[in-house]
Length: 84
Image (tube, rainbow, N blue to C red; front, side):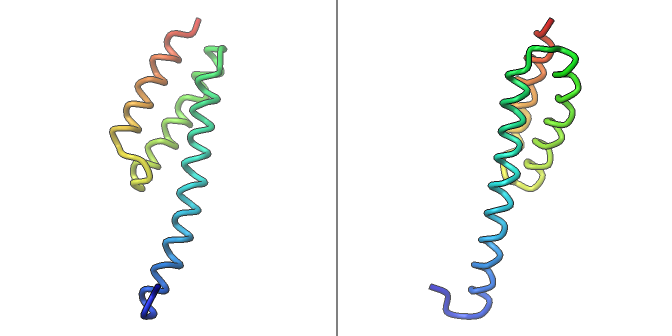
């Protein structure tokens, strides 16, 4: 357990950051699922920039790896373009 004040503060900070990271990553995952489930091309084109923005922000904050974000964006772009 923490032996000094700075270690206690670090534990508090980590708890807050972990909760924030879990929230934003869960939100982004749900957005990706929703976009993949979409069958309307117009709706998908409207959602795609917002989802990409979410993924870029997660990668910037190092919640997910930048390559994972790019791979997801690429697969989503293929999905959006394949819709009729």
